[in-house]
Length: 114
Ligand SMILES: [Cu+2]
Image (cartoon, rainbow, N blue to C red):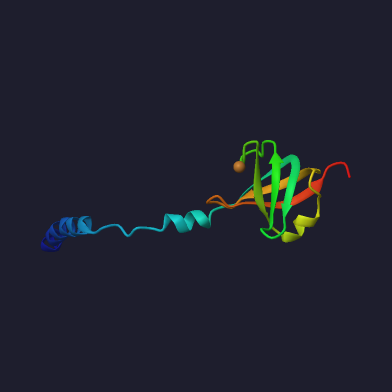
């Protein structure tokens, strides 16, 4: 029994030293990020223009809390049916999703006061 414990005491540090040399397997952080949680926020602004070929809406929005500071930029419309909901120049309420890695999408749009 004593000999067994002694063997363990010797063996354990050997294993520890051995495992120290092993390089940790790199995990794919980029894959995790792209599969990360979608952030969603609501904003209000003006629909500036509609690009049916690019499937985008150019929106001049106020702050979209947690998603985007006030700015004019184009968002992919998902679903594409959103392209025909409002007209250029309309005041709109929108739902914006941040799907990660610069992928900003408008998922809902409604003209205000119509
Ligand atoms: Cu922006």
